[in-house]
Amino acid sequence: MAAAAITSTLFSVLLINICLLLGSAFAEDPFVNYEFVVSYITASPLGVPQQVIAVNGKFPGPTINVTTNNHLVVNVRNKLDENLLLHWSGIQQRRSSWQDGVLGTNCPIPPKWNWTYQFQVKDQIGSFFYFPSLNFQRASGGFGSIIVNNRPVISIPFDTPYGDITVVIGDWYTQNHTALRKTLNAGKELGMPDGVLVNGKGPYRYNDTLVPAGIDHEKITVEPGKTYRIRVSNVGISTSLNFRIQSHNLLLTETEGSYTVQQNYTSLDIHVGQSYSFLLTTDQNASSDYYIVASARFVNETTWQRVTGVAVLHYTNSKGKASGPLPDPPQDQFDRTYSMNQARSIRWNVSASGARPNPQGSFRYGSINVTEVYVLENKPPVTIDGKRRSTLSGISFANPATPIRLADEYKVKGVYKLDFPTRPLTGAPRIGTSVINGTYRGFMEVILQNNETKMHTYHMSGYAFFVVGMDYGVWTENSRGTYNKWDGVARSTTQVYPGAWTAILISLDNVGVWNLRTENLDSWYLGQETYVRVVNPEPNNKTEFPMPDNALFCGSLSKLQKPQDTSFATSIKYCGLNLVYTSMLMVSALISMFY
Image 1 (cartoon, rainbow, N blue to C red):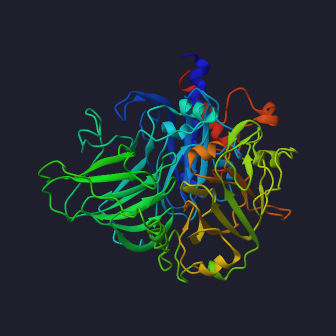
Image 2 (image 1 turned 30 degrees about the vertical axis):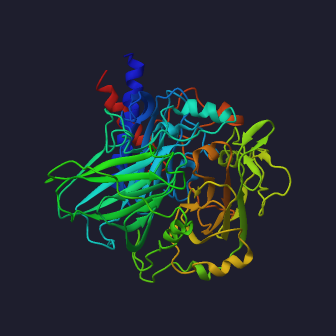
Image 3 (image 1 turned 45 degrees about the vertical axis):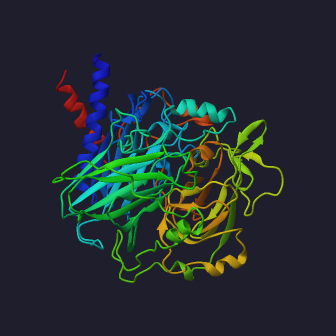
């Protein structure tokens, strides 16, 4: 290796570590550092060799494990052959949409480049996941779980579990994301997935006809007589999945950062982009292993039999392998309200502490005056300018070449318009960069109206919103009479059933530019999203972190970008330290030792 390259590498590594060490010594909240190398590997999760996206050579990627108020630092090296952004689904980057990792907010990390995310998981707990947000890449992997633990001084509303288990489930195709992308670009549908993966592995061979030999399956080993916290995220493309464990109850305790009223479920529908955590008590006999199942919902089960993920729960004293038929899914083919009633049963535990003490109980959202109302309507894909597109309220979002937040910072005009309609357009659908103008400290009501025949889930970055109502039919003003105004769960991703609506309330207290989208990857790719721009009008804006020192530039500002990203580490400014000169001297001294 050339001396200059060695010097550059040493400088990068040493400055990262110095920043972290000094941050730990002088800052109140510690820093947690991760190094992510994102690359392609070959894997055969369904028995067919294919290209998948790995993080540090692993598929799925490693679990990020942090504690409330930690500063999370993730240094990402992009070894893909295309641009990359990592998105932290459900993590509310307080005052810093610069780190959100979606194309309307951030410039992408080019191939062979290195870039560092840094943000604080401020006042937050719970179960989340990360994934690549560009170019349909999530369909090839690159995802992994995120755990945000309580600080020790804050109690949790249940006894400390014996262990913590993370599970990612999702539908899967044996074609990689570039092939699937070409299918969508050609105006075609993706069709039925080839299977469902559990922690990146195919189904256990519970049926010799449906499951071929030679497929590796996931096995989760547990001790008998213990209680585990099991965190489950649906990281798939577009399929809602029913999750269940044979002969075991799932005691729901938390979803996307909110403790829930504790209820037992024999199975739970987990929709695309959603995360839940359960308490699992290993109280069954060990005559055999038990099936863990994730099966497709709201589809023709006869034709979708192969789209089932099966893993194994293995007691350490088990006497044999799991065998026989899988535990039955919900028998609600003729009752479309079953799943919705299950969703309505999930309530916020208003007496439990989350990331902070909660002596007053619930944040009383039901008594806050709504300042703005948006009805967002999705319809089946349409053809606009000769291309198949998905729309939200009649608008198919076009990502700008210059990200919205960067355009604001440099006062670049014409990048977007603050003209997203409060009600769906009545005219012809159009393509545009149309953004919602959110009122800082306002209280927004959003009605998500699903006029398609398939399930959708919707996500908003930077926020946990209150899910206050859902029903079949078309939302009207009178629908507010059915709202839950006391203990609707606060989360970042909610389902909207086919031919139905879901109402959410959002307290716009987090300054930035935040993505609001469908989590169905095919519809998102085709334009079903927008952004909510929340700006503090006060002259001295102290409510948002400044642009990080290592910000990337693209679009009309690409001339500001240096040939290679030299910020390689966290912003010293974000470490809360004014020690740049000292750090440089220390690095210089250390490097001189090698020459």
